[in-house]
Amino acid sequence: MRDPPGSPARKGFERGEENTPPPDHRTPGNAGALEHSETDILKPFSETNPAPVAEDDKETDGYEKKFRFYIAMLEHPDPGRRWKAAESLARLGDNRAVGPLIQALSDEDWRVRQKTAWALGYLGDPAAIPALRRAYRYDLEGVREMITEAITMITMRMTE
Image 1 (tube, helix red, strand yellow):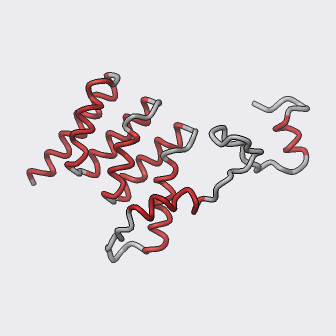
Image 2: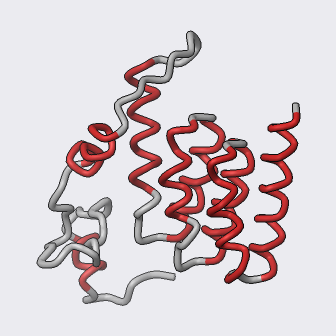
């Protein structure tokens, strides 16, 4: 669906600003650009969790950048991006993502919570079990099913 003529989005397009990102509604006084760069957003996380991932097949700089990007995306205003970030973090296989994923279990969007439960099960870290059990008590049936599956995946890994 096209924006109507004269709308702010259409005017930006007509001026050649078609790739201008929309304002971030979470940042007060934002005039269409984020006040913090990606490195500023990710800096606190990297300082609190500096543990490197030591696998030969992963490029340290590229991998770290990707990892920190997905961690930051867990806070994105678009639930679709948060959902994809949870999945991507799981597929990276880095257990440093368990803490941020546990926080994402309380996301406002049920699809994000469901994918986060899957991600925690995929990672298989037993530290996620108490948070998954707490989330189970208060969530929707579809999310509960994924939480049950995640706990099963983690306990199966523990017995291997």
